[in-house]
Amino acid sequence: MSLLGLLLFIIFKPNTALAARIYLSNDNSQISVGDTAIVNLMLDTEGQTANVVDGNISINQGFDNIIIRELSPAGSILNFWAKNPSLENNSISFVGGTPGGFNNSSALLFKIVFSAKRAGQVVFSPADFKVYANDGKATPLNLKSETLALNIDAQKKPQPSDQWQELVSKDNQPPEISSAIISSDPTVYDGKKFLAITTTDNQSGIDHLEVKEGNWPIVRTGNIYVLRDQDKISPILVIAYDRAGNMNTMLVNTARPTNKYYFYLLVLSALVFLPLIIFFLIKTLKTFKTKKK
Image (cartoon, rainbow, N blue to C red):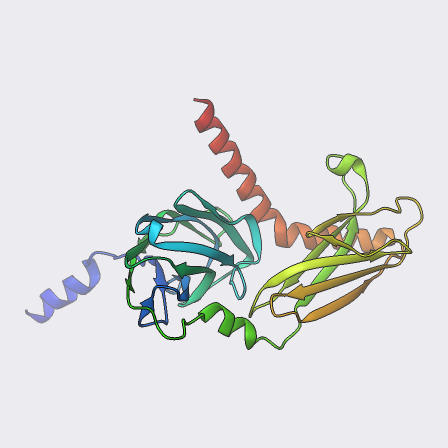
């Protein structure tokens, strides 16, 4: 090729867009009946910044050969879940996001923990995936996906392996209670004050939360706890446990915030969470319109 031809090729060559990559990985080279294994759902953004992932993992082939034990977000790059990973028939669906976005070549989305029930092959296939850019416009990224096929050996091991239990047993770090904020909204919980709790545990994952409010007994709760004392705010203790039994606590500041505090909290919430909330509302509205048709 002449120098002129090479120059023209460089200037006018087609612009091949980068494509984010959805893939699954497993560290267990040999899975036998009776073993418990972990499949990691991963995302390579290919140098781009993404903030929302929406998709399904289909297990059409070999679903009867396994039992899904756990869908764990422990260690996930996603920390805001519009829909937690959930199993419906033979498909795992989820919608999650990260305020501010992320650019990562090996971002963990969540873990699929399963036990091998019978010999054969099981295939995990990404389906209907959408990854959105962190550009304020919810621009879908070009996407490619890879399936994962695992073979289950009929020959049982003398001692079945359990990757999940091995991971849990190595977790000696307490979970993190990122925040516990008292709030209220006339549209939810009959306008009652509630406590919004945010927690993370990057190893074994959060097992459960407990709340001790004033002189009332300790109760188990989810991420939202409706206050019993709606008039005089009593002292509140939040207790978080992970799957390994590690515990952490947080004493909630029940002092009534000033107007200035409210202002700064409102501005911070708007800057961080509003883009994701708007995206999820638009997606929900589109889904509703599609079903209505």
